[in-house]
Length: 185
Figure 1 (cartoon, helix red, strand yellow):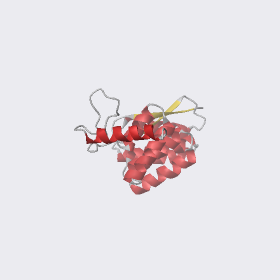
Figure 2: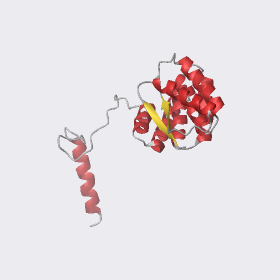
Figure 3: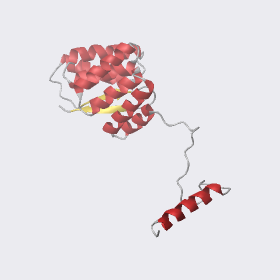
Figure 4: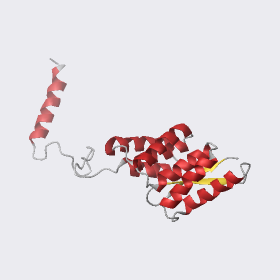
């Protein structure tokens, strides 16, 4: 019988709280966690991933981009972002495959072409990289300084494969901002 008293007391207090005018609602300064606003819109995985990339958290960014892919589908933005995260993680073959797929989905998306060019440069495929950078530059109408600089570096490397000046290739994405990747000689 003594074992029942704590259980009965707990049950009674829950029933009384549920029957009171406030019910089990949190109160100002109370100990209950705040409720969830079901009308609020969560930040999409692509935006979170871009922020994580800017912070250098490439593995977390990749997970966020994969979440975006599950929510939005394999759009050119999402695939380009996934490819860029894989590039930053040193997964060049995966990055190349994903970025090629992005360029197939939307042949007019300059960031995907540029980022594919960066992958190709990292793999030492200078001829193809310069061609890809030319496509990105033409699609961008020469407006992106990052794409222009990448094209110039690729052309210099194509003309002189032993070119050993410190080279900095830049990944780009839709909207403001860019990601940098340094090539080690």
